[in-house]
Every structure is written in C-alpha cells, then in structure tokens.
Image (cartoon, rainbow, N blue to C red; front, side, top):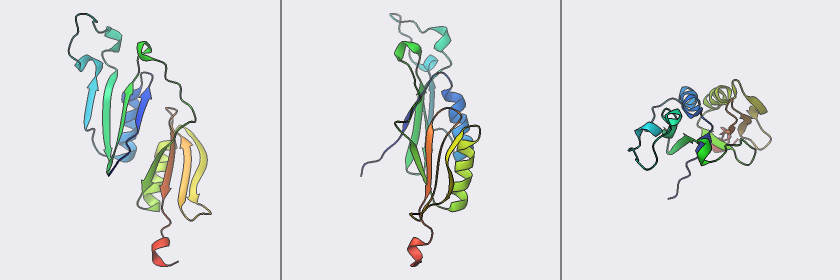
Amino acid sequence: MASLNPYLNFAGNCAEAFDFYRSVFGGEFDGLMKFSDAPPDPAAPLDPALADLVMHVSLPLGDSVLMGSDVPAEMGTVTPGNTAYVCVSQDSVDEGARVFNGLTAGGDVEMPFGKQFWGDYFGSGTDKFGIKWMVDVADPEAGTGG
C-alpha cells in the first residue's frame, strides 16, 4: 500500500516550524539532522552560516510522516504559495478543533473549522510559517445510520 508523506521546505526557520508542529500534534522527531551533521567535504567546505540549518527533520503522525528542511539560497528560493495544502484527518471533532486552532494560531483562517454541508467537520488556513493546512474529521454520524 502506498503512503503519502508531505515534505515542507523553509527559508531558515525549519527548526522553529517543526517545534511548533510538534507542539500541535505531539510526538517526537524521528530524525533531526543539521547541515553541520553531514560529513565534511574538503572540495566544498560548509559555510558556517548554514551549520545550524535543518538538513532533514521527520515527525511521525499516525501512519504518516511530516518531513522538512531548510533550503539555503545556494539550493534555490522558497516561495510559499497556494498550490498545495497539507490535509490532516483527525478521529474526533474535539481533536480536529484543537489541531486546527493550534495550526492557525498566529496565522490566517481561510475557512473556520466547523460542520460543513457535506457532513464532515472541516477548516482550512495558513500557519504562521506560510504553510497551508486543511483539518478534516469524517462525519461522526455517518457510521450510525444518522
């Protein structure tokens, strides 16, 4: 079975963002490597300004993993946009509301979390790091014949 694991890029604040995500979702990092953790390359010495940037971090979330890294200017430009959302499905309305409120704290709410016409509880917004999120809880009454 295939799985989908979002990988987020940041312009120098990956560690701060992932500490924030860990505070919202709980759990512990499965891995955290900084650029200074890579083996030295005499042909391309590490710029000291990059030493503390995150090369890779992973935060397990249920059966998925949220991953990310900083992108130094030499590797490209990070431009937050509206071409993708990270959608998080929760098991209860209370947990969905908690996660939605946590993710959008200091950010922007696009659609407030609440009961939607299709039956689910849903909300969308952008966190304070420019990442777009959707939080969904399947209609709690769907399995009860209601």
